[in-house]
Length: 248
Ligand code: NAP
Image 1 (cartoon, rainbow, N blue to C red):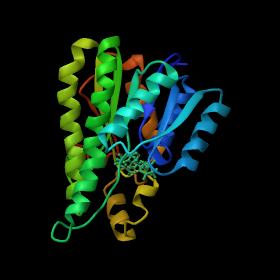
Image 2: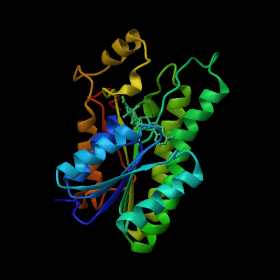
Image 3: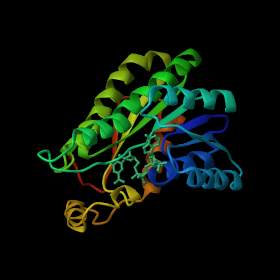
Image 4: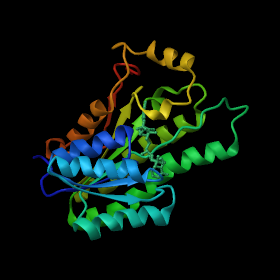
């Protein structure tokens, strides 16, 4: 039970990668706040799964792109479970399109949910973590932020932004025993791709040496490592979980 006595907030944990992370940390003994924006029923199911396995969990609705709601989420964790040691900034969206036709609203929505939310939640959590001289922040970024992906200028920019944010914050808070790392996922089989044309999916698969999509649980294992005390001397790192796709 690596996370016994720890409290973790996982943003966007009602499905996909966030759900797998919540379950993985919950299995390790952490008390989990399962954040979601609109999927109340799905989030409640995640809570019940964690509780059925003997863990502690509670769901909390918040659009983490909105600063006050993000602050409310962090405060909920501290009020409900009494502490906060682990923050996983996972909530994310795509609004793909070539730049000539990309709407300003699609640029703004992606930057707000993927990058500003990382700032919003981290700022609120770091205040508490610095005081307690302990913290683990893990940002779920993408290889798209490293290698770029056509049709994803907004998404790639937001994910590259998360990497810069991770490194800058790691330098700011390291002396207070707060580590900040990122996991750069490749093509992981989740609902985020539901509107992506099959031809684009085939093109992505063609770039993967391991020849298959990743599973959310495979990303969750990497997050669990960075959240654990085994990674006490790891900060500012970007751990790639992509079947070899980016390999730079
Ligand atoms: P997903 O299946 O679409 O799940 C996204 C989750 O984020 C949902 O629980 C959604 O909840 C939540 N969410 C979205 N906007 C939110 C907001 N403003 N506030 C709070 N929650 C919000 O996506 P996924 O594939 O698991 O992606 C999770 C993360 O991994 C994202 O940051 C994504 O960029 C990153 N990633 C994914 C892949 C991949 O191939 N799947 C690769 C690299 C990186 P609601 O439905 O309630 O809004």
